[in-house]
Amino acid sequence: MKDDRINIFYSNEDKGYIADIPDLKYCSAFGETPELALQEVQIAKIAWLEAAKTAGKPIPEPKYRPAI
Picture 1 (cartoon, rainbow, N blue to C red):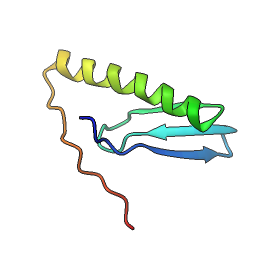
Picture 2 (picture 1 turned 90 degrees about the vertical axis):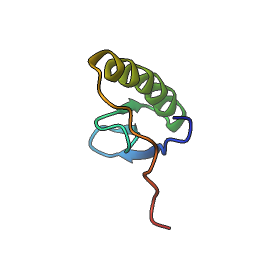
Picture 3 (picture 1 turned 90 degrees about the horizontal axis):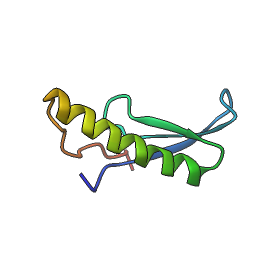
């Protein structure tokens, strides 16, 4: 799962950056800068994967690709 797509965008509502991994449902994180949001979502990804394994849930293969 090294090729997961990570989206990072600015949220006016939250006044900071949100990073998410579309292939991992609800895996997202907040940061005051894009770099911090990226670091936080990488931590969230590890926790997401560990929780899925513990629960016996399947780990999806990366397939999300943005429209270009």
